[in-house]
Length: 453
Image 1 (cartoon, rainbow, N blue to C red):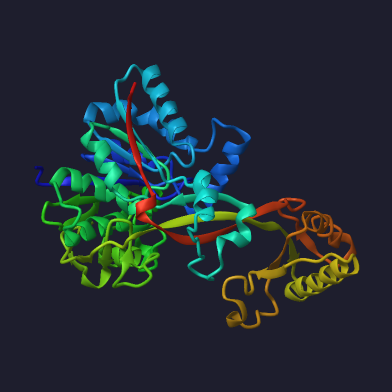
Image 2: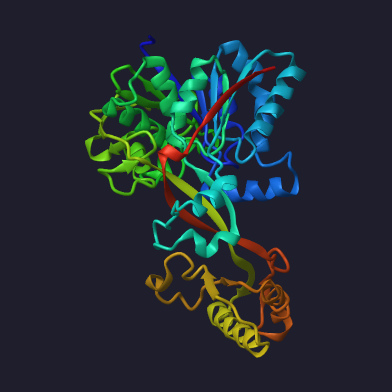
């Protein structure tokens, strides 16, 4: 058993800083690289991509990253944990295998499947399995024909199984971000999955680094003006011990800052009930967390308690919810705000005269109240410019498309001094809505497979 295991967070979402995982691998010693690519809406996007192209459906950026760092990974024996597989885990793994072969490198790739339950939904529902929206109480039956994706949040167990089978790169679909960090600790330290305190500690470690640079100075409210060298932001590293304690840190000679305040801010992210943070592996109690400074850019975390896991998995279901389009116009001084308000009313009247109906028409005055709404109060009369951001949402795509042709005419048929028509004619986009539900764990079977390059 190792005395310490270093798990580096290299990706907080699909589209995060491309240089971060490279820096984590090359900037100092780590044992594991954790890469979190998925958000709820990402699954539906990937499902649509695969519907158009059966070979798509995964985060292609991950394959490009592996091409760059795979030689380092193999040389340093770093293991990679990623949920980049999206809705085509096997396709992602095969793409990485091809890269390894092109580079002449031998590597074992773990494939974790079982989270995608779209093919089973109808059979389960026909046999009495209920999918109830956790927020609204609505049954899935009401929107079944609109469902685009349905994925179970899978925990750390299959990741541990893949590690035990010798996988160096493990790729899954809707693996929980916390499980990506917890699994290496269970594997290395031999933790029992029913040692709720240690499993809770590993889960909270994963929660702390799941958002990448957010815990090491990025998007940090406390004393943000004095956070050093954000251009060279160092991503976080968990330095864990067998007893369940760990230190949050980052590589030396990198920007940003890890301190008690930055860790506290990240702990509050998506926390919910602090005494009951539910994951597939454990129910963690955030109120038991203790933090202590452990030197420069080092915060020790200890004292964590946990409770037995629930009998259910959470299911992330995405469904089509209509169409939207958003466009902007910028009005300049003098009377910038008055011009923008007048343009808003003119446009609303024209849409009404055309007989167009929408579920929602929404206006924001950027520079005045787009962030704080009515709490912002009235602006200074001398405000130099205001951006009118106007959006519509509705079930009728043709009505939304017609709206997109009504914004530009305001330039010459509305209030004066339009100085910006950002992005041109608005683009019609399909809306994906989120339907969270629960499913008994007994219905879900995960599968682990190892392929070699």
